[in-house]
Picture (tube, helix red, strand yellow):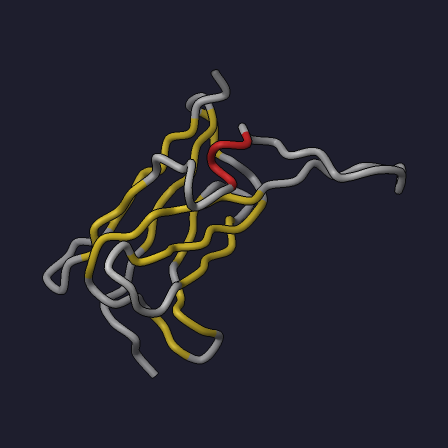
Length: 112
């Protein structure tokens, strides 16, 4: 099933590919959210649900989750990225998906 046009991209932190994590896309005008896994090379492909590919056209706020792996199981896992990118209210990451495309996005995160 197709939810909308295909959308792909790259996530970097200080210019280097973010190698693990996930993205959530929240429409600014209401509607269904979407998600994407971040691949080991920093690339991603957006899906609305497990069975629906693509994403409806519109503007989206993007949040990022990327946790450091730890050998210890004590305490909360630490985030690889600044906290502002992990919350819908504080993230300044935005994308606009169009029916015509191309919908290829570079999400540039800064540690400072």
